[in-house]
Amino acid sequence: MKSSKLYGLHSVQAALDYSPKSINKAWIDEQRQDKRLNQAIEALLDLGIEPEKLERKKLDKLAEGNNHQGIVIEVDMPGELSESDLKTAVQSLGETALFLVLDNVQDPHNLGACLRSCDATGVHGVIITKDNATGITPTVCKVASGAAETVPVYQVTNLSRTLRWLKDQGLWIFGAAGEAEQTVYQADLTVPLALVLGAEGKGMRRLTREQCDVLVKLPMLGKVESLNVSVATGVLLYEILRQRRG
Image (tube, rainbow, N blue to C red; front, side):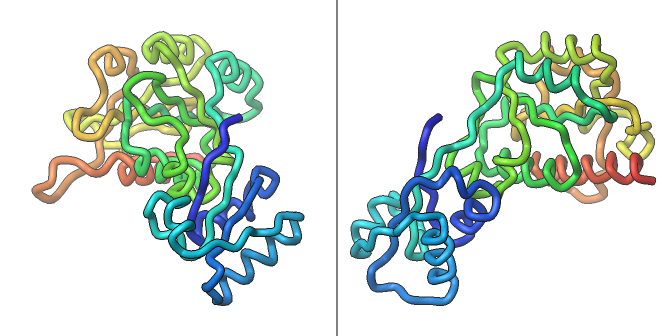
C-alpha cells in the first residue's frame, strides 16, 4: 500500500473521520494555535500519534508549498481495485446495480468530486481506465473528503471489454452524450445499470460509445454546451436515485 501526505484541516479531519487507521505520522506548525487545529491534535493523540512540531518553512516543504493550515499527515492511500475484484463485486450484489464509469477522465479534482457524489447516491463502485486517466492521488482524496475510502474504484485495462462483460451480467450501459435524443428524465433508470461519462471536453471515445445501450443528455437551456463532468455526474446520479426511491 502506497503512502502519501495530506495537508489542511479539512483533509485531515476527513482522514480522522473515515480512515483513522490509515494515518501513520503527523506534523504541526510549532507556532500556530487555534481551536480546529487543537481538536485535530487531540484526535491524533487519541490514536496514539503524537504530532511532531516543525517550524513553518519545514512544514511548507512537506506540503510542497500548498496551504496546509498548520498540519500535515502521512496516510496509507486507498488503492485501486482490479478487474477481478470488479467481477466479484458485480456477481455478489444483492441489490439493483449502479456503477459509474469514467472514460479517460484525467483531472483528479473531477474524480474526487465524482466520488463524493457516488458516496451520497449509493453507487456500488467507480470504474476507471488504466491508461490516460487519473487514479487515486492525494488530490483525489482531498477533494473526495472521505469518499475515496468508502467508494470502491476499479481500474480496468480494456473498457470496451469490461462494458461488454457488464452487459452479459444483465447491466444496461447508459452513456451521457450531448447529442442524445432523449433526456435523462425520459429514461427508465430503475434497471441495473452502469452510467458512462467521457473525458473533460472530449466525451466518450468511439469504442466506448458503441457499447452503450442508451444515450441520454441533460437539457441545456443556456449558451454553454456542456457541464463539468463531475457536475453532470452529480445531476445524473441524483436522477437515478430519485427514480429508484420514487
